[in-house]
Length: 456
Image 1 (cartoon, one colour):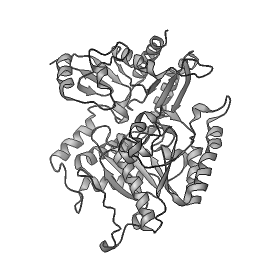
Image 2 (tube, one colour):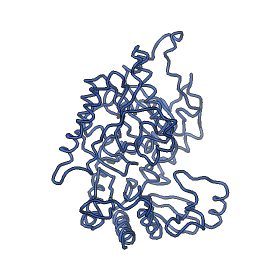
Image 3 (cartoon, rainbow, N blue to C red):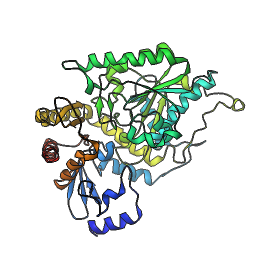
Image 4 (cartoon, rainbow, N blue to C red):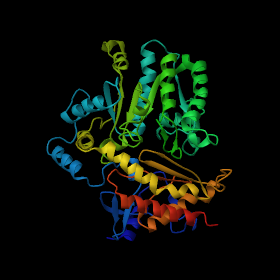
């Protein structure tokens, strides 16, 4: 078995996510050609294909892998779970893995998040939070509350409700006729701050738009949904925790829920276990997925307050129950992988070590700041983003059709590093088991790839 054989079989039957499949075709233009890489195995931060080539997984396989591929601790936990229970219906039944994980999530998430509801993936978690918030107000008789407030440049998933509360045109525009109307507010993205203006000052100033929206629409709004600190799919744009603190206060003032989508930023990515901790706030709902199982199995969770839970707790005949369900809700294997992942956080000093690794990443990308085609190097914890532009001084962007980031991606693969840029934004979000030499390799290859991509 070799790469070519696997690729031929794949292209005959598989339709890949977030892909223009023609890019994988041998007839694609040189500018669009995108190699399809068949992976045979993984170990730590490394992936290996069928021809023996290795690739450093600098993006944690779409931001899910925390402690490396084939992690022995998670592997062992799954072996043990397989011998007892793989899955059971969670409607009217329970099992130890789902229960223990719910207890653990209630313990480690911000205070006041007392009840845990499981689903399969991040988009589903967002759908649950939106529905719960709407349904809560309905059960309280406030049926006029039907809208949601979201930030410009936000992304919350690909299902219709999640798409509706997102604001990245690339994902959303095609399906606009199918989506509910939302209120979109100018965001705190610090890329646009004035020269010499701090992240804190800019994020504080930008909150005025949210304040105005809440003051005007609070009576019809169920919730505000945000990605705390980093808008990941929105080109890894970042903002200051002060915005979250002000948002929590405003949501309380106007009696609107706050939904924190920590699907991508939770579990240590931003320098704390959860990004909300940096603003010392508790949302009304927190959505978790991706790193929850260490990158092993699809699982998500929505945590909310006892106050929300009590609005649904009633006699059956009153029809106030939350009847949302998924076939694999609380899957035992997924829950056990999540427990093993959280166990690693408990047994090892992960957050402190991540801060050390983040410092190494800061040092490794220092030279990018002076590159004539880099508008900004930004970082929050274990997330680093490098924004390529045509003109550094005016920040004029390259035309998206030129796909400069794709050139970096192709070059990096040829040098054994998996980077998957967001347009012209090159970013690093590696597993937490990466070492100093691997960080330097990641940065060196990105530097060389950028040189190649902007050489004209």
